[in-house]
Length: 239
Image (cartoon, rainbow, N blue to C red; front, top):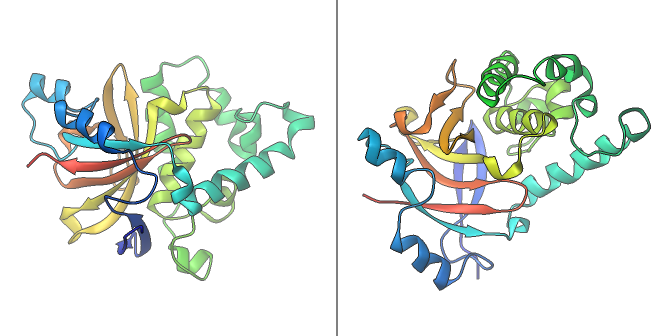
């Protein structure tokens, strides 16, 4: 049976799956991770000598249905996005589908990926931080970008809004993950950020940090799990 723990999340609660949950990568996947450190962290670290918790092993699973709040957010987004098909076309992700952000995103169309993530991070971070309990009357609601536009949100909602904005510019799902971390600077509270891979290097987009920074320059976040539209990863520390 799955084992779960409740953790404090941006002032609320998150339910996360622990090692051994049903549907997670089986022994061969774990063995593969044990044979070498996870992609994105180890090679980079050897060149820079950083001691970051983003250097870790990970186990991958394609069973994102374990995370109904994330999946529910994706489904709600699809539902609202498709109501704009007659105006914007049938493509699921486009600047037009993000309504009031259309002009801003279209202006980034020809920029480099690094410039796009810098601009989107700054733009989204200007929205005020608002707890779930204020917006929704309960904790741990995962907002679509449309809901974020209307109500703003908390840490995971900033990460989702940035993820969806980059998808609207054509950035591949495979280059991004929403990462749930433990923030050691704030007594172990659970936090969420977006990680984007640019030329094989991981960068963090964080509502608590004013600029985009390399993941390996961050020492106070301990990754717990990460997720995108197709996969999720459980992270294991090397030390």
